[in-house]
Image (cartoon, rainbow, N blue to C red; front, side, top):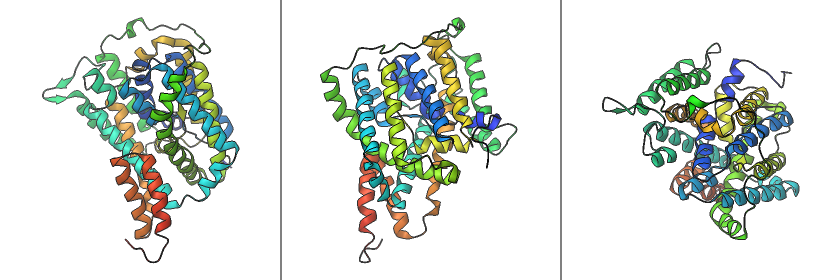
Length: 399
């Protein structure tokens, strides 16, 4: 039996693999929605560490992407975001403790699980390309391909594209290299680029100033906040969370870690996400979840044990406890195009789980789910996939 905790350069590289998803939404919700920087990073760090200890295998921590994307795009208030996190956590606790999630998981066909993984993977891959092209939400809000770099173009070509192409090629070259792990090299190179060519965002004044996050740093959400959040954020998020962060995540964990992932059950994932959101609510952080995309990212870049959780959790805790409100100055040193490269490889890793689909009917379900997801949302794709998968059990139907 392998050790549950390994600490080496591969685990370090793997721990950084999901920054392409985590950092842009975290920064966006701090800048646009007014979330507390210390609370956001503290909650992420603690959640990573506690889930690593409990599950004993690499376990992802991600922002709730439906909530994050919509909240940033519409500049929703801090109270509305806080209300959404509290409600989602409460719902997950209920379906976890009652065992309702076990029923949903039991009757989710494998083709539907693969559809969730394929759709999520393509969304991540597409998101990575948009970051390299300078078209993510934050880049558009800042009206710059690389908002924190002095240099925006190399000749007629946007600098993000140049950095992205070089980062992509370096990642391809080093992806299986154990001495120079791809994610570690790419992230360190990105920080170096940001340090040399970055604009002055206060980084010259960065200093270690110990600070502990405050309990309830923002006012408790009002009734109006809960009403807006339930319809705009919570109801669209729940089906995606069930499909991607519970069912698809548990399936992928079992595929990667086998018997070692026995604690990664549908019920456990619901309950730990519920507790994680309660923790985040108390400290003014953002809504958090697990997710198959995050697990694929960590695994693809080298994470093979819960040690990766402790490493990345420790990094986030250090940033929260010693840099506090200077966090954005530290994070802004990593170019968006570098995060986009990580996101592309994470998405590709997750999407390729579809390779074990053998029949036309099995393959058609995830492909249809992908089409519906791209046209509407993963929540709608998940529901449609469940209906189609059971309909195709009939001998009368063919594709």
